[in-house]
Length: 459
Image (cartoon, rainbow, N blue to C red; front, side):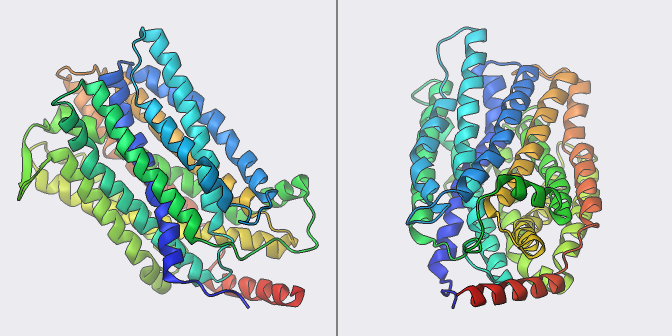
């Protein structure tokens, strides 16, 4: 009999992605402009650094997945890494936002080293975290529920960051330099993230183990993964989706600083938000609403169709973003809200479908390699993030961007392209790719039932 999943465990699992998403959102939104406008590296150099370091980092994900599959402790295979890596994760995040007194070459080397270490720590804690989804419950509905909680907390973490990060930087700047203000802000965020990861470790449980007769065989596990067609389709759709998100996030602050002219503010009671902070807050809020709607909508339409329609909608609406004038904030915010809803609804489905792909692999081959499936999936996410982040900075350089000066008409036009047609094309590719996914909800019910019978017979 499978131990019943309780609410606290779902909340505990959600805290882990709150921590990850706080850092992910910082990397996507604040890190590029920190590197170009505060740290003092050119956009082209940052784009190249992101590509080089993330290619190395991406190759670490399968290694981490294999390591997790071969880890055996009293806490399970995946949970121990949340405990072991949490504090290094937070400390390296602070180092990444520390500006040393070095020349341009020295700063570039420092950025390469600290960013590489950060991505390795991110892999070491996020591959095990993602893999947990495949072993906390054998039930598809539980997994979708876990994934929905994960995404709600992910966007809650993102909302927290977009609300406090820039205001904290501005507050610290009243007493310290801009560089030091970023560092102090990261200390606060890092402490919160460490605490959240420790809660995830404490409140979650692992319930599914590989078949008792299964022996470690990396060659066989890789062979099964390469024969997993649904996983390859998810990989393609996931990469395109992350390019869509990372380009929109990466260029947002440039869009407001140099096109909208982010000097005016919106005041709610005693709280003052810049236009860009309000834009980011709105996006994360409607992202979260999309996450909440993922389960009920997918029950009606199916996971694949919900994913597909959401990405097609995001593609069309992103293209319309190009035609929003800098003074038409209502149109900018309206498009942001609907596009972010479309983006939010697909992420619980994507991770739930990865868990289904792991079950499909076990059903087809008789072997279970949850860590490898999820680490390879995490690798695809980072690949999309890498490509999107590098594209953003390379395009900025291509269109003639120079930090902290009035931008040319060509540069502004390029920034508008990166807020509209570029992510729109990625969303379209994602929607077209997911059309070929064949693991329907009905088929997965049969597969899960067969696997559950095998588990019962083993017991």
